[in-house]
Length: 167
Image (cartoon, rainbow, N blue to C red; front, side, top):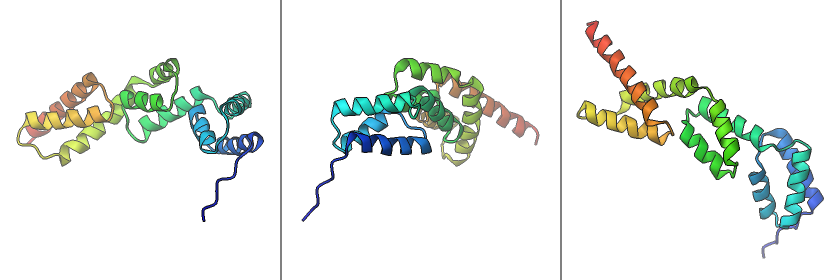
């Protein structure tokens, strides 16, 4: 015989979510999803989210900024992948634009170059054209712009030519 889930009250939800938010950044969508799983009514969810926002436990812009910086710095994501991930978390478009525009252009290039350089060594290709196609596809999957990819590939190929000329 299975036990049913215990209904959670609005006050309990507020306390649990405040404790959760004090430990790590979360967005309002994540909090709503948790409360839906707990079976909390939509009007109660709105009140809890409002209380968490007023108490500065959740702030979607602060969350988006931290999320984007972490994904660019540690996971080496490009701007398109960051934007898509924030969209999936129901972050508004104006916040997404602002946060992505704040990230320095060099951050994306600085993270793309070592990625492509490492991938270049591990990819097997019959021609330079095939190698370029595979590297472009890889970088596009990581969320980088085609222009950024072409610039980085051009730099890497020029470095490779210079290294070959040294012998």
